[in-house]
Image (cartoon, rainbow, N blue to C red; front, side, top):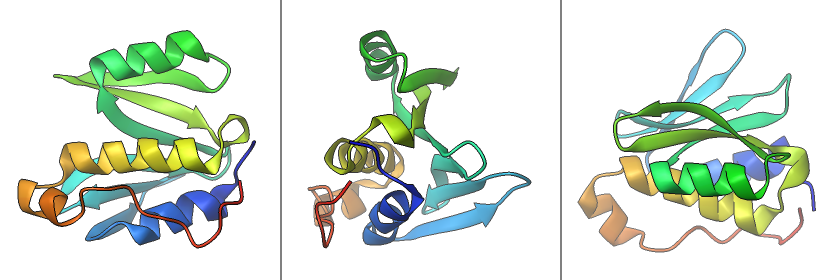
Length: 121
């Protein structure tokens, strides 16, 4: 069930036009200048942009895997514990976060989540 950072990074690498910025204890990810995710190696967690209702649903369903990070406008960011999620679900969540920040032309060119080379996780 659990994935590690290599799976998360393969998902990130499979998305188009993603740039990263190193912070103190984390790396942030953007698509065309708009942030959609974070990764904290020390805690083996990622932070992902979601819609508010999705943030609430994820946290309510599995508080051992998801927690509220913060809210901003119509978006609710969630912390995801990599130890509690599989590769397919993580791929969907990362893609959704990317899609919420990507411009329409890029979304149109990439309407589906990336397919990882292997289905491990």
